[in-house]
Amino acid sequence: MASDRELRVLIAGGGTGGHVIPALAIGRELRDVAGAEVRFVGTARGLETRLVPEAGFPLELIHVGQLKNVSVMTRLRTLTDLPRGLLRCVALLRSYRPQVVVGVGGYASGPAMMAAILLGIPTLAFEPNAVPGLANRLVGRFVTAAAVNFALTQRYFRGAVVTGIPVRRAFFDIQQKAEGEAPRLLVFGGSQGARVLNQVMPKIAARLLVNVPGLTIVHQTGPHGEASTREAYEASGADPACWQVSAYLNEMPKQFAEADLIFCRSGASTMAELGAAGKASILVPFPQAADDHQRKNAEVFAGAAAALVVLESDLEPEMLFTHLRNLLGNPTELHRMGQRARALALPDALGVIGRLVVSIARRS
Image (cartoon, rainbow, N blue to C red; front, side):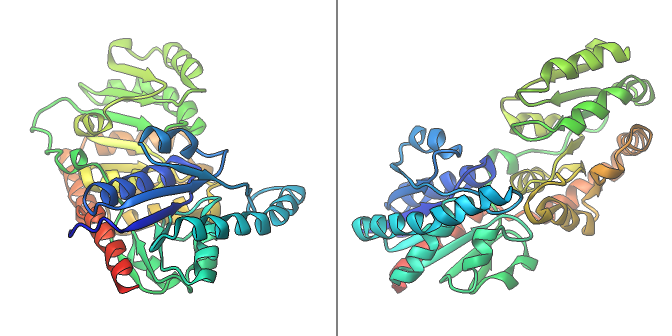
């Protein structure tokens, strides 16, 4: 990618790790490879308040709230805040004068992208989910271009390109486990954990360990579920030498590499990591995810026979035990599922997105 020291980019959005972490990866790519000056716009309630300054980027804050899945009063407050947020973004854009505004979804993305469109500044929407969130749906037909993770998402945007999601190189470097290695099950519900996974897994752990010789279970609970989940495993009678419960797991590429099967949610970043690592999975979509996007993400993998999808409303111990026993006892099928997952991965997502931003800036 050619260097352009005059390139200025504003990245807008955030809230959850699913928005902030890819946004930071894009920011680093533009700063380190394209030589761009990069600033972020977010809100005080999102992870960006901590992660963006830690990464060395300036962060501007606007005040805007939620519109979906909230009370009428919260929605009214947000509608009142939106004009002020839009005016604040107009002022920021006139001051900073970026050549491109990149919207990554989340609270701040909508006002910033709308302000850029009104001012005639080129825009790129980044959409990791199969179905866009509200902010990206509102601006989809007016953006200059879009970087999406799934082909089926292209219809929501003008100028959409299937780029995939930025994923750490370490996930792509994971090698297939050697034949004959003891099986391992990795259970995690994202950084905050998933209550339903924490509740159901200990109920079948002892029986699963007996039925799958050599099995070990590594379970990430999130910060609020560690104590209760550990107590449930202890009460189950499962051999304590065969399971590990942690609030957080470090070195996730290493955890993926050692796992034969992953039991998890289906957020966009998790799906990208599963594809990059080439790992079989049982996916339980978060039912309260906006626009049911986790279910739609999971259905893409299920449609490719790369994962098994179980809705949370259908998740019960006996059914889960059967699925886990059957898959963990069939290394050939796990390998095939992993290969199908890897076929869905796009290893140069970050480079493609970076080049797309530079191309938009040059055209402008």
